[in-house]
Image (cartoon, rainbow, N blue to C red; front, side, top):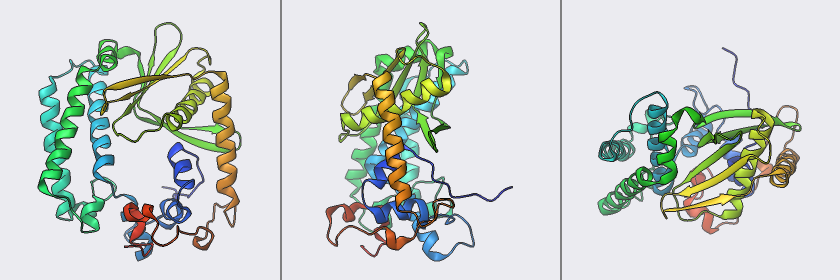
Length: 305
């Protein structure tokens, strides 16, 4: 098997990281590289482990997304959607295992596949009541998913579901781009509907519009969908709301321009663009005491504990 090569591949999440703390971005995409290997240097291993940390709010979204994906894959394969009580029981049981595995440190044996919480890693665990509230929130959102009209519609026409949390890579200008669409479904009229599940409170409509514009670019360029046949929606399962976002020629053109601008900025910090070489000193951290440092995954390797 060929060795993995650290490439600069653009994604919406990478662009957001780059616009934040430069040092955290470096740890995420360079300092942690190779840290999964048993023979990795301690610094790379520590950065890799910290990269995999999650918070309760992020974890809630991961669990709910996984429930939605599993349910839709099942119905797409011909199974009948099970009762919500079964989904809730599975989600609650899995959530408890995640918490216990993080608490006892066993997740460190396979940090890429198991859940590790920042709260445990940095020894500031919430109370049992707080964990219980987080699990209750997962249940509430799973129940909301089962009641959601768009989810119900997907379950009624599973053959139209064409993409479901599938990692795709495509070329935009001179940079490769990663996208993972929650759901892409044919609308039965020659177009597609792109659905994005949201589970948190602090979602910005402008940021969501940019993300959906990139998805629209993918749909037109890689799937051949006309730019006037795309419907993009995000469903917030925490708030019980849904919003439609325009994704047409203008938004798709803007998405391509943003990708080009962002990729150029990322390359401008590299010591060697051709080989994607980045040096830590070129990625300064935030000022000491910056609020963001208190919840950054990398505060251990960054010396900001």
